[in-house]
Length: 251
Ligand code: PGA
Image (cartoon, rainbow, N blue to C red; front, side, top):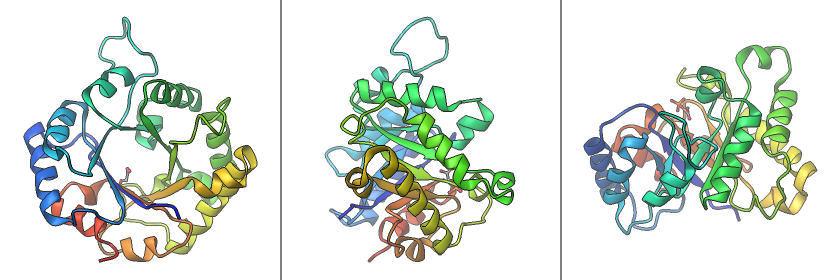
């Protein structure tokens, strides 16, 4: 059984005390041991506040990005080593906003995953096609390329902690969700691609989430699909009440 993950990507939102408040409120609103694993990805400046607020609870904290190098003359950058030292557990690698707005290539994403694993962080690899690619019937080819290049030269053992988030770009922040059937079918394709690289056993254990306009109104249908192992949520994760609804999708 793959344990589901409900993850909130706060993007460039909230101040440190607001992240602390969010986590404190969330802990009040969800069961002490919820069925899904819960991860919050606040901005760098809020990681410490998020970690302090979660205390000894089950909530995990992740960063939204790190540089792939551990240290050096890279003004403005933050390394995986630095966030690991804070107590952070997860890192998003290759979110589509990073890829499109900050020119992150699959090669860079590959190095970020290396940096995450080298520093004991769990990588959540984000993949997804644009509307144009989808309309041209290129979805499978685009996802295959992203997976092959981002996971190049890793062994299955090294990737034991990997999670993949399938986020069609046209569904992010737009209110347009892939239908549950569509998301399920694409994630099934992604699992088959991973099986081609690392074997069926690995692929069957791998958790693959869906992301893109997930909200309390569609979470149940999405989570009912057998291939969808959770959700990576932007907008609907910013308020504790709404994020709690997502965590409690099965309650
Ligand atoms: P959204 O964002 O839920 O606001 O569509 C998802 C994401 O960017 O991870």
